[in-house]
Amino acid sequence: MQVVQTIDEVRAIRRADPLASWGLVPTMGALHEGHLSLVRQARQENDRVAVSVFVNPKQFNNPDDLARYPRDLERDIALLEREGVDLVWAPTEAIMYPPDFQTTVTVAEVAKPLEGAYRPGHFQGVATVVAKLFNVVEPTRAYFGQKDAQQVVVIRQMVRDLGFNLEVRVCPTVREPDGLALSSRNALLNPAEREAATVLFRALSAAVEEWQDGWREAQHLREIMADIIEAERLARLEYVSVADPVTLAELEGDVERALLSMAVYIGDVRLIDNMLVGEE
Image (cartoon, rainbow, N blue to C red; front, side, top):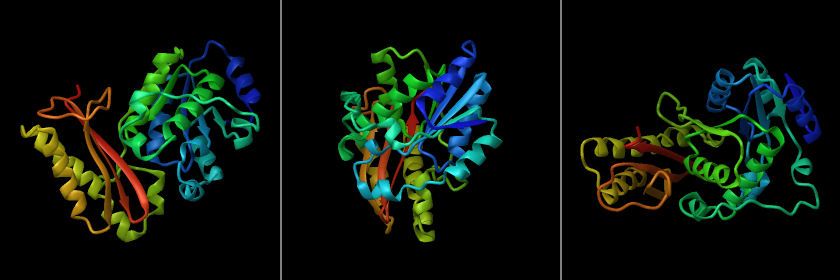
């Protein structure tokens, strides 16, 4: 496994075997089983696998959140080596955003609701860094988790609009046995908060069960989720949503397919989660 920092090093490795297929797993490090599941999928579907490890400051709208984000590159590298990764690209901020950096990528409508409404500039930061990763690595396929559902929608839109020559692969959310979606931010929870954090999974599961039982009115599903979150003493609801899975527009009336999603503070740790209903 090769671990490199610079763009020139990545390109030299990538172009040494131009006929090989490459899978890229973009990460911000602090790797967990969710990331590793993406790596394994990429390993199955490609000749080579590259993983980027970069805590992207441009997608944080809260400086405290950026400062607290867990970082352990040495541990990440050891995990990736055990998974048979070929290339780890761990650039510095100066490499990704040199002093004269002036370009951003903006995806318009699908970046506005949900996370976009509460985290100004977040998806501009995501789209900009992912576009740069795609441009440098030139992957055949890029792998993302369904947990970050809106991010997936934004990236797919960007890939279509800008004509990137790659396939976006989306893999299922990986959960703890009690249902909590794996997230690097889970490490910031104390024991009581960690127990309370299962409320996201419980709320989403209750709404899915209602939908499966035929109670499909969008506002009813929102209320089911909100009531469960608000009953948890350590939780503070930021939003619940029942949205179109493609446009992310909020739905009304009975829904045949929808993205159920939410953002919830457990203590001062912000967690997101989602489930799909009506998808094949």
